[in-house]
Length: 401
Image 1 (cartoon, rainbow, N blue to C red):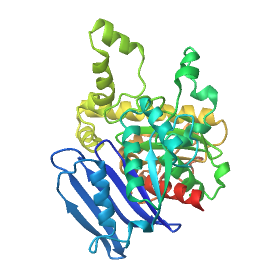
Image 2 (cartoon, helix red, strand yellow):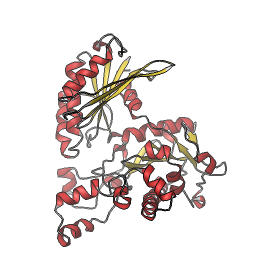
Image 3 (cartoon, one colour):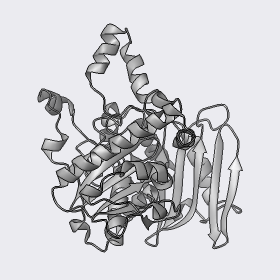
């Protein structure tokens, strides 16, 4: 069965075509700068064991419809294609960022589902509208395929009410849906399943702290295979320090910025989302650059790393308390989590009293899935590369199967 996974951003289309249930990637690609003067399309074909074949186009891409049509053409192209006809695509799995409380699992997309995604756009104004465009364009091109929605928030719908409610007037929840939703759920779900397999435990018995560290970052407390808490909330702003986002902050800072320093609300929103985090502390949101500067003695970069990893460490402790039983493993994933040995070592430093001991030599290795804790550590530490596209393909396939 051919499953096409599509992740539509405001100015991009990311895609992968899978042969399921094997999970083999047939091709993948990225359409960038949709609607801008200079667009780019990168298409990778995986013909055989000899490796990938890359095709690049640098042309203006007027809109998502034009970009998706070009993707469909490349799928069947004589040189770059991997199928004979668009009708060979059986399922199209769409990443949708916000599913609110309505969607706790993967679902076939209907007109009612599309209307709800549109309605939820107020909670994810940068993402849901673009995700909806991808769905509507895909329906026009892949007419014989079933369209399936996989929601970033779905994995966290198992969080109990005492964890997802804010201590604010109840009508804000009941009338406006103000609560913790969490994000990166597809990544946390994939990591949870993979960790259970690696630990040789049934999924419904595995207890984890999963740590997704990219430019955006989040953690989840996973008890018996289900999310019971997560660091992101109504929006992707709270929790961990991120590339440009502040993470947790005293709400009073917002009033101070507005009332005392004269910041407009739109400026505060921009400051906390785009000018804070690593960028605010060190002037750079790229962890590689910040780490290099810190190792060379740059005080601002070192402080940024200390703040960043201290926040992770605090959440490890609080999530161990929330889980309330023996933790099986701490799992690092995503770009920073998979590649920065420095961040991992600082995040779990001095936690031996909690049964967490890092093997420094194993931590320095940089390839694939690997356990990086010592043999004496009572809690495993793992690095597991995430694969959100494969998880979306699996979720879509399970609906049809």
